[in-house]
Image (cartoon, rainbow, N blue to C red; front, side, top):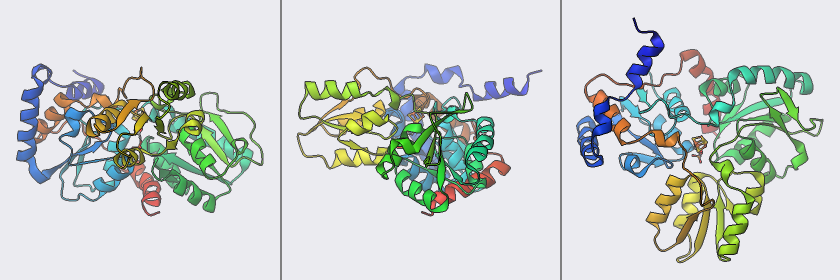
Amino acid sequence: MMSLMEEFLKESQIPESYTKKSDQELTDEGWRLKKELGQRVYIPGHHYQRDEVIQFADDRGDSLRLAQLSAKKPDAEYIVFCGVHFMAETADILTGDHQTVILPDQRAGCAMADMASIYQLERAWDKLQETFGDTILPMTYVNSTAEIKAFCGRHGGATVTSSNADKMMKWAFSQKERLLFLPDQHLGRNTGVKLGLDLNQMVVWDPVRNAFEGEANEKTKVILWKGCCTVHEKFTAANIVSCRRADPDVRILVHPECSYDVVQQADYAGSTEYIINMIKHAPKGSHWAIGTEMNLVNRLKNEHPDLTIRLLNPVMCSCLTMNRIDLPHLVWSLAQIAEGKPVNVVKVPDHIARDAVLALDRMLMQ
Ligand code: 13P
Ligand code: SF4
């Protein structure tokens, strides 16, 4: 007899036949299924998804926009999320019980979200309360598990995205004296500095050692969880220097998941949506080096042939987990829905969803 785990793995594994079809066969089948399923299926696609996948998206967006849009599709029976696991969880939390969220490949996780577990957070919280008393509000980047969001919800905190981190941090300071920012230390630090905090008013919390890294004292305003995006961390200040040396006219545009040094030395820093808008409104003929996920940078390059666009780090690879969603997995997911046997369903347990929605709603209401 198969164990539950073996059954799950078998169910979440794509049949070999899908991996043998040509891209053209899969594309044709994808469009046929999308037409057949019509309004029953809504496909949100994150900007970092592959071109072959994003063509099927009903809407493209960053994590904030996709969370908002998913909440506004009560008529879709299925939400086939082309993004990563935390985004599918968020969609499940924000949509109705009559709706089913599917992540075409369950292996599409997020390295950053994996850097904060609820076990680590609970033991950190005890120590932080001992140090600072009841003066801390927990805030989490949406790039985190539903359990981390639920913890923030239960303790009066909220979620943030890269598009609203400064607004949400201001709100947090109207609630409590200091905040714990999870799981991306870089977004937390860059946002704190943008709001006028000194670097010495922020201290890093190492969840593995369960200890501060540096001095925590009465001046501390932000406790930064020691997590990061393994993709954005690969852009360095040295990349900026070499881009400027190679092209003195280049403008450097980066995502705030990049380190403090990179953001400080860049010409512009902002969320995925901000990066897209900057390029959309860029002067004809201008030169850009962009520090964010490669699929998006390549797409911007193709969509704006009048601009010179390059990736800030020329030897980067794309986000491996975002790329797990490929044409075979997407088409297989649609085919399974059409057959009435949906696979790779993402379902957040009710007791976690109930608290996580508090944190998401506090963000969506701001
Ligand atoms: P945003 O979509 O909030 O810009 O986040 C970028 C990201 O890394 C998503 O995983
Ligand atoms: Fe996670 Fe970074 Fe990939 Fe976004 S780009 S899914 S934050 S690892």
